[in-house]
Length: 110
Image (cartoon, rainbow, N blue to C red; front, side, top):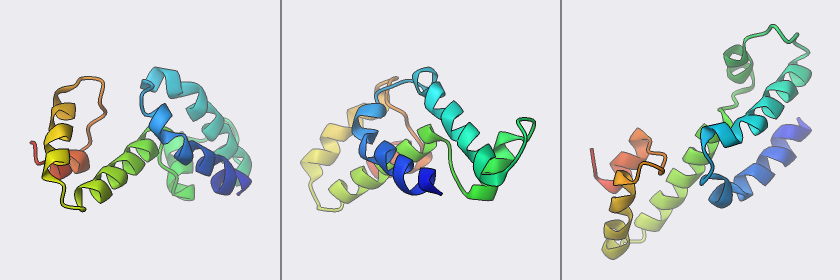
């Protein structure tokens, strides 16, 4: 559980930087997480990754970073700053910005 309590927290704190990377660039981190999940659960390399993630309740690193980003944006928007909301809406049209249904709802664009 060292990975979950320490390493994942480092990734969470690095999210503002890591969110700029593509899924391909984050793939090595995903591979490390996959190996750690196998070690934690004592599973062979043939075990399906989705099963391991479900067992440990761990999302992918990209999904976790999107979740952190959405929560942060939500907190910022809950302060009532309409000008900030207007400045974030163009992010929806940027192909490099990872958009989740939750972020679409926050930004008010569908």
